[in-house]
Image 1 (tube, rainbow, N blue to C red):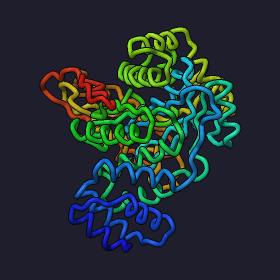
Image 2: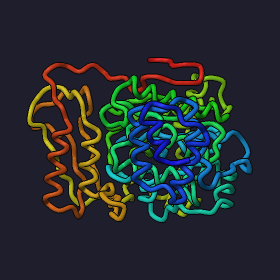
Image 3: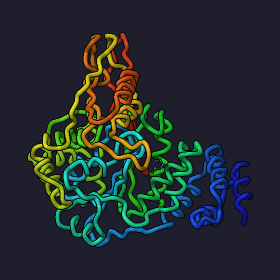
Image 4: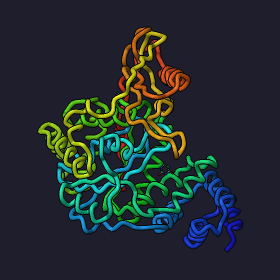
Length: 443
Ligand code: URA
């Protein structure tokens, strides 16, 4: 076999066999096929697509390229949750303790963020002492004892995806449904969950900007999971504005704690309850979504979900006192208000632009080596649909060490992110659709 023939076959719209996909992925992993040939193949896939069988084969090949985690020592149905990524998305911080408090074991391996704001691990590390590193035995023991653990991807999970994703990032081949679907699902399959709830974001701040593309991506991932024997559902949720009000690591932990205190922003609470309900149903703890929602609301109201977060934090070496008293979490020295330059109604808030503003303040990494400042970020004061009068505060920047230039740039970005209309803006849906193996339910 020669890589050039496979590139040509895909370029001309052909279908690659299992063996041909294995040849490309294994050859690339071993360094026998160079970046430039895999770049050309990825571009051919970008334009020609892949059918469900090819996408499934690519997923398996990448899942098998490194370690595969066996979660069977943990009793119960292990349900994983994965978000395709968004600004202000702190759902894992809420869902791990909430779902665990309802009896579904959460053995979560999360990632860090590059660009925009930090990932789940960065958010959790804003709690003093919190460690995301532990060996397999400790991980299993913690999930067994308290029902949940959130750790970094240890060992060598899907190295082929890591290499391919880095290449796609710099060759304009990220936004391809089969490539995203196989990349996400290879990691989920290798991480060993029995069932998977996907949160596929849609809108200006998401990979998929339109609802139809988001549904197509969700269907591709549900198909892969289903064919590989993992019960998989996908929720399509809004990313036309950041989720909640807080963007930045400690700020996001504080907002997650508010939800666990049975208060906090309605949009974040709603998305968490929707995703959590799916997790409970898949985890066999509720017969349907209505029953699951009741259970979750009960755990928010009686404080048991918040208590579970304290247990997780303490078990992972963190200061649970900061969960009791979130003011003790890292706090920025300076607050800078960004004010509206027009009156009207907030029509949209470009999530990606707000994310870049937060990164400029130090909440995310510009390069792999960048140090995150846990305290900094942005707290929105206005969300879509709100009325605004010229001079009102749109958002507050939480600033520490960023240079005056960066702060000015962040201020400009936040102002640019807000679109103000003269017409009232009707409430926007938060959850657009649920995709299961049986089809698509639109809301
Ligand atoms: N997230 C992933 O893990 N992979 C992609 O390709 C896109 C988003």
